[in-house]
Image 1 (cartoon, rainbow, N blue to C red):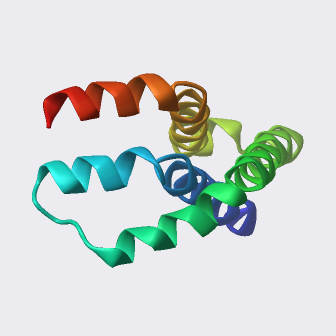
Image 2: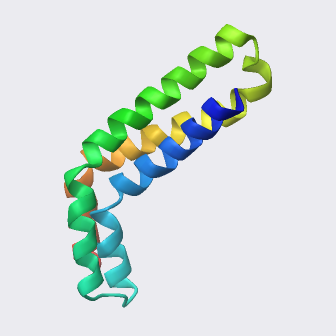
Length: 107
């Protein structure tokens, strides 16, 4: 079960990273950290939906495996954290335009 739990946490973190690929450079520019390295985020943005879909599947499989093996009580907080991070990643992706507009107003 530890393998599935690790995969769900890794998937949730990667989903959060892929989702913030467009808002994060704007936030870093507000802090004065700009430059040509920001172009790296364009490649990540191209695959963000795939990363989010895969991480959602990994989290769902982890929930199913925990339920099937009877370890839900011991792992529910880890799984809930992964679910919240993945859900937050989906919210960031769907609200990306509003987040970027807000950050542009702060400049």
